Length: 58
Image (cartoon, rainbow, N blue to C red):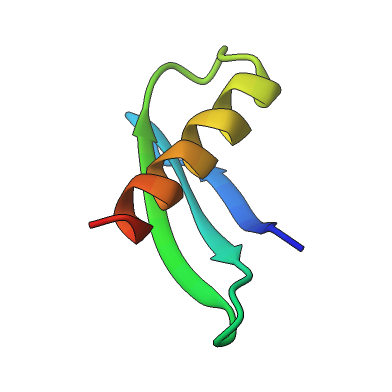
């Protein structure tokens, strides 16, 4: 199960710990997305997950 832990606003954007499941065990990423505090929470979650997926495929 994909988990987003501790989503917080830092003044310039959002940061969160994202855990992605794999066959070899969970992968943990610290993700960051720039944007105002007024962003829709669903857009913030989608952007954080997208950032984690991009890090995984590098």
